[in-house]
Amino acid sequence: MFKELTIFEIMNEISNKSDKTVMEIESTNNPDVKNLTLKSGNWSENEPWFVVDEKKKLHTMMSMKSLNKIIKNFKATQEDNFNLKLEKIIWQNTPIDFQDVLLVATDEIKSMVAQGERKVKITNADLDRLIKKIKKNHPNLFFNIQDLHFMSKERR
Image 1 (cartoon, helix red, strand yellow):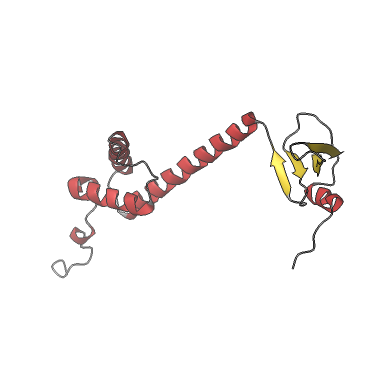
Image 2: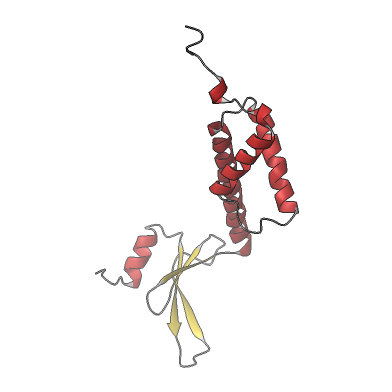
């Protein structure tokens, strides 16, 4: 079991620096009103602010600008991850010209999105099927390993 931390232990967990804004929410006689007490830091624009509720649970507050920035960074990371997965699957299928396959795949994905086929994220399995479809429809973009006989019996 975990020991329940006091407000001061929670504040120490956050940071030993005094520049972190930590507040505590306290109940009042009116159930619609709560007191917010500054425990450390200041009311500056430094973000995030940490809030400890009446049950000693820690919460964070930040501006919409900061939240939007986090979401934007998350989306960029998600896009980078998707592109890396796509590149990996293309390389696994032995392309003759990687850029040509990537261009065809990108056009196919754009077409799928434009047709509304993908309102959810495209998974690895979807990418694998896509590249197999491209390989079937455009066999000239890929090496056929079965046609490459380095040490065939006929050459010996």
